[in-house]
Length: 213
Length: 217
Image (cartoon, rainbow over all chains, first blue to last red; front, side, top):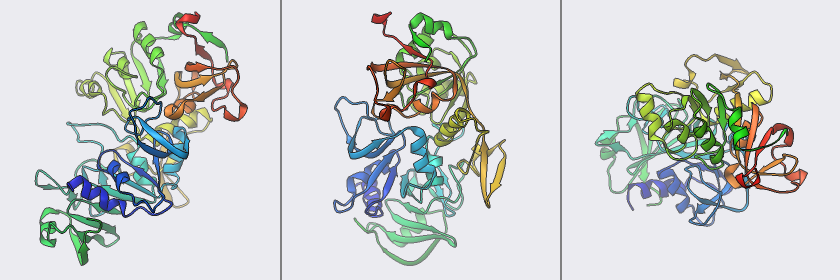
C-alpha cells in the first residue's frame, strides 16, 4: 500500500454500520474503497446526493462534489444545497473525512488558503468541520520533511478545535482536552520516528500497531 | 410566471453593474446558453453570485475570462485559475463564503429574514468585520442576506405553467437562487406539459421567464 492507501484503509475502520459520511476530495475519497462489506455506510456529497455511488463514464447529469460523473445508489436522494447543508450544519453527518494542509494539537485545521500563493476557497469544508459529529483529518505526516501536525496552525484556519482524529501514513492520533494522544503507529515506523516527524507535543501512553494495515 | 423569452428579449434585461446569481455546482446545473448570451451582450461591472468560479471555458468562468465581472461571491475558485490571476492583479474582487453560509444567506433573503446565525467561520478570516452574537450560550456569526437583480437557473424541467423540477444533481443552488432575485430566468433542459404537483421543486410564482430554444423563436 502507498501512503494514501494506508491512510484511507485505516480511516475506513472508523466508519460504523449505519453512519452518514461525507468524504472530501483527495485521500478522503479513497476511504470509500475500503469500507468493510458487512457495514452499511451512506455517503453524502455536498452538491446534493444522499447515497453517492461510484464514478462512471456513462452519460449522466449526476456529479460528485468534485464535479466528476458519478452514480447514486438505490434508495438514495437528490437534494438541493439548502437541504445538503442542513444535513452538514445541523449535526446530521456522523463522520466527515477531510484533507488539510496543517492540523494542530488543539484540533484546529488549515486547509483552504496559502496567502499570496494559492486561494482555492473553502467550499463546504468550514461547514463540514463545524457541523459534523466527528471530524477525521487525513493527511501525509510531512511535506518536504516539514511536519504538518503542528503545535499551532500557521496558515489561516478552516476552523478552530474541530478535529477529533488525525490519520497519517505514520500514525493515528486523537485530539483530547489534555492534548494530542498518539494511539497507533504504522509497523514501518517506530514511536521515535513519529515523534521526530511531529512538531506537535504527543501524549504517549499505550501505543498500538496501526490497525487495518 | 410572466412568460417565455427569446435570446434578444433576455439580452434586453441585462445592464452594466447588475448583480447576477447563477445556479450550478462546478457547472453541473449551470445555464450555459444564458451565460453565453451575457457574454455576447458584453455588459460590464457585474457582481456574480455562484457556488464556484466555474472553469475558464465553462459556467460563470466564461464571464470572468471576458472581464465582465467586477466582483465574484463564491465558495470555491480553485477550478478556474484565471480568477486567481485577476485577483493577484486586483482586477476582480472575490468574496469567499463557506458553501453552507452562501446557500443560507441567499435563502434568508428569499425568506424575508434578516440573515442567519452560524458557527461556521468563527475564529477564522471569515469572522472579520462581522458581529458575533451569543444565543443559548453558543457563539454565532451574523451572516447577512444576499440577493440579486437577476437569477439564472439551469438544470430544470419546466411545465407550461412555469413549475420546475430538476435533473439529478443539477438541483444544487438553483431552487434557492430562484427565491432571492428581482427577475428569475430559467434555461430548461426539457419542457413537459404538466409536472405532478407532488414533484414540483420550484413552484411557478418564483419563475419570471423561461428561455425558448432558438428553433421556437
